[in-house]
Amino acid sequence: MNDAIQAFERHFGSSPAQTVRAPGRVELLGNHTDYNQGLVMALAVDRYISLAVAPRPDDTVELISTAYEEPARFALDDLAKDPAAPWANYTKGLLVQLRERGVRFGGFNAAIHSTVPLGGGLSSSAALLVSSALAVRKLYPYVLQADGSGESVESPAPPMTDPERMALAKACQAAENRFVGVNCGLLDHISSLFGRAHQVIRIDCLHLTVDWAPLPADLEVVVCHSGVRHALVGGEYNQLRAHCESAARSLGVEALRFVSPEALEAGRGRLSERDYQCARHIVGENDRVQRGATALEANDLATFGEFLFASHASSRDHFHNSCPELDVLVELAREHPGCIGARLTGGGFGGATLNLVHATEARSFREHIAMAYEARTGQRLESWICQVVDGAA
Ligand code: GLA
Image 1 (spheres, helix red, strand yellow):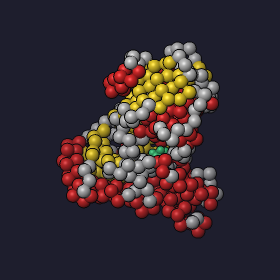
Image 2: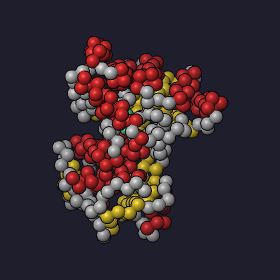
Image 3: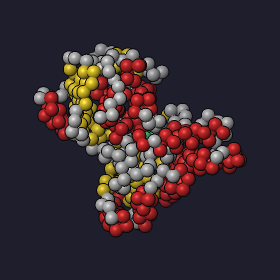
Image 4: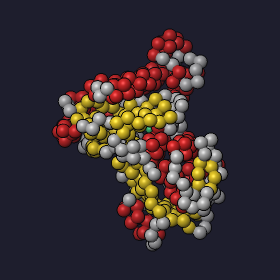
């Protein structure tokens, strides 16, 4: 948080009025299931986007980021996409959504600092959207209703309820879908808002419900960054989603959530090969999340870990959202006796792997994988042990 405050003071020459932060997330199991109305498990982790903000009297927003040199400045009556500062599109898109929901706000200055690695697959984008939404709520209090409508309220805004959190997650998703142009699901925004320390967030994207289950205490969450930057804005993500939706249509259902592994095989003849492969990944992931939840509840870590490895293999072989570097990372993780499971996390095409590692072995695991990864790919590996934390408040 200090970095955001200092950046604010340096650039704007005064102190911020408020600070907020929102965590990144690690997708534990359930890949690309969210926009298929499926099931997913996630963790909010101790990598944050922090915002230091203050209102300003004109209807202008000035954003600075410690990750970019140029500030972004725009008038509230001109919330258009700016190719010169794509990072500012998240906040802009969010403002558009709040306004459409009936929220009134004025201008503000904001300094953004991120410890969520950009392009690392931990969803810096959702953390930026959520922190922007909370920053505006602190400066210009509002409440969102479960039906999505919103209204400005007297200061201070009341504490957020879970239905309001869900409504806010949807507003963030809409900003990303409609303004930024990524047809992502709700996983990232829900995770950033609903995280709980030491708990796995279990999300049902059909009923839009969330519950929590403890993550076994002796496990560390190790994230290994392949060094391949992924950008969902790249279009592959939207293509995968289109294949899933096309498969669901051909099978006569609203979403792949309603397709069992048996029904998929029975309907295979109605699908193009690519649609089938994509559907196979999603249907398999929903099944693994369900069975994984049971394994975790029984503290059967070996079985849970195998679901992680199987999830990665399905990404690699069916969904095609892995890349050679991620495959190497998972292969190397499997070699280490302390690792119970590993898989790519998030959209794919680069970014990071998630590794669940027995705490006593975490150090040796990181050393092993860093050395072996460099030997295999010539690239230095960055890895982090992440703590599982509360969501944004
Ligand atoms: C990205 C998207 C999410 C989700 C994951 C894959 O993180 O933003 O909505 O689809 O990929 O599970």
